[in-house]
Image (tube, rainbow, N blue to C red; front, side, top):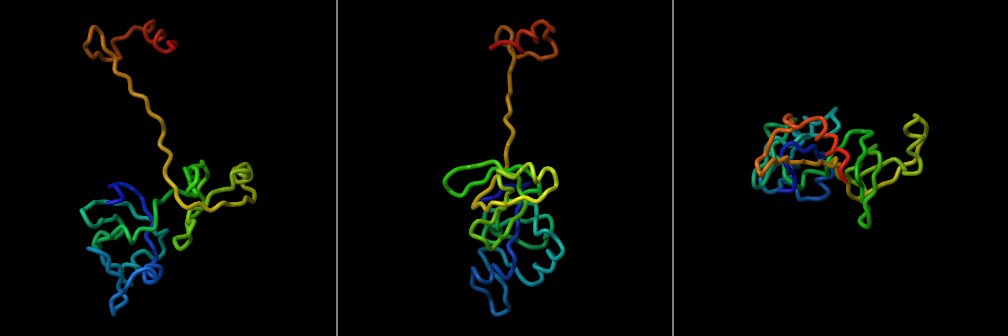
Length: 172
């Protein structure tokens, strides 16, 4: 499965899925162990089509806004982000950091970011241009974990003196 529990994703509109996949005589889209119907679509009306993956099974997902329905990878348009969130985007050749401002499920390049030369305009509430990108992913902050050992035994950082902390902080 492509997505993990807790990830936020965009659900494709039913009309887009009907163009992409075969439908039943009732207009339902059936993909593996998931069925997307007009009733499912109605449950997403008035929302931003963003759901959170609540449970991952071998062939489908349960999501927070549609707990009685099973969603498959083919029904998900892409990862979801908050408006104004900094994300990494790619057109296939390189990755760049941009401010996310929109998503168009039907587009070949569905992720919309503030033009990198016009971020100041965006931040000042002025007009700004956008760029379209094929892929996007969250920016994960760099983390650093340090284990402290004294004579081979792991110790609590609370046991270190201020002088030792200062020596560690300034060590190169």
